[in-house]
Length: 153
Image 1 (tube, rainbow, N blue to C red):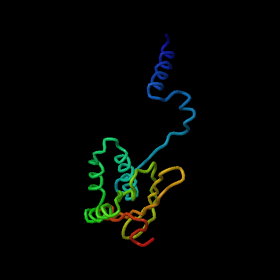
Image 2 (cartoon, rainbow, N blue to C red; image 1 turned 120 degrees about the vertical axis):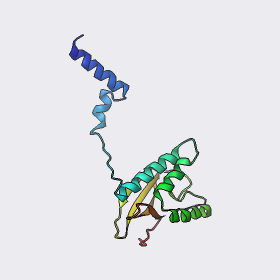
Image 3 (spheres, rainbow, N blue to C red; image 1 turned 90 degrees about the horizontal axis):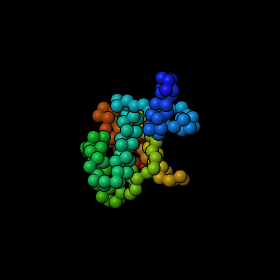
Image 4 (cartoon, one colour; image 1 turned 180 degrees about the vertical axis):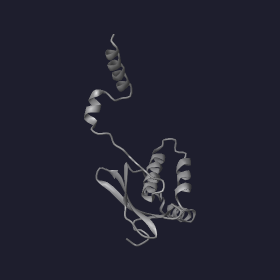
């Protein structure tokens, strides 16, 4: 077997082993990229919601990771208010629901004193909810989650 044939065969075996058969590569289009910056509040809000929804979707049901994410990303004084809302409403305050969405999207809404983002949670093909999440520019912690932002918008 020539070295060229061996190289082609090895590449084919690797592609199949990695689930990247030639048909899948051709139909997949250009590779996607996701970038982030831990100093950017919109990235931090998107990171939080992505990790939180992943943790909520975990089948073990321990809740340990969601608690850790809340402690890391949410201002402690606001976390107490969020937990009071949850006790009163019998729902998850981060998601404002009793179940877990299928998708999420974070869009910058700007502001001067704090960062405001619109978080769209998609529950099914035709159902979504929009939340407004405010994050402190100084502490990079979430200070509010609701249907309107701290500025009333």
